[in-house]
Amino acid sequence: MMKNRNYYLWLFITFLLLSFDVLADYKKVDKGAATWDKNDGYYIVFVARDYVPGHAFVIWSVRDRINKEWKESLAFGLYPKSGGKDTVFGTVPGKLKREGIKSISSINNGLAVAVSKKMYDYSLMNTKAIRTGDYPYNLSAQNCVHFTDMVARSISLKTPNVVGIENHPQKYIAKLLELND
Image (cartoon, rainbow, N blue to C red):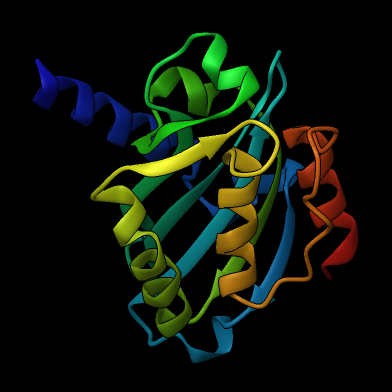
C-alpha cells in the first residue's frame, strides 16, 4: 500500500512540475542554473497552501535536461508529532514529514529557485537531522514557516522576519517573493 502511495505521489509531483513553465504561477529566481551540467537541473520550490491554519513547505526536484523529465522530487514540511491543545500553547515534539498528494495539490503560492547541485545538496543535508529524528515544534517559534525559512536561508535567499504567530505561511511566502529577484 505504501509503495502505491509513493508511486502516486511521485506521479503527481512529476505532472505538477512537468516543465519549469508549469510553474508559471510561481515567481522564478535563478541562483545557479549556469553551473548545471548538460544533464541535470536542480530546483528548490518554497510553497504555501491557503487554508486554516495554512502550511508552508519545501520541494526539492531534479530535472533531466535532456529528456525533459523530473527524475527526483522530495517535499517536506514541519508538523507537530501529534495534535491537541498543547500544540497551541507550548512546545511539543515535532516531525519533518513528507508531503502527500493532497498537500501538494493545494499549493497556491510559491517561489521556484534554480540552484547549483552544491546548493541543492547542502540545503537537503541541512534537513537530515530534522528528517531522521524528533524536532521541537512550537506554533509561534518553531513551525512550518521557520523550517521553510531555514531552507531559504541555506541557499542565501533574502528572508522576512519570522518572529511571532502573525507570520502566516501565505504571508511568509508572499514576503519571500517580494524580497527575491
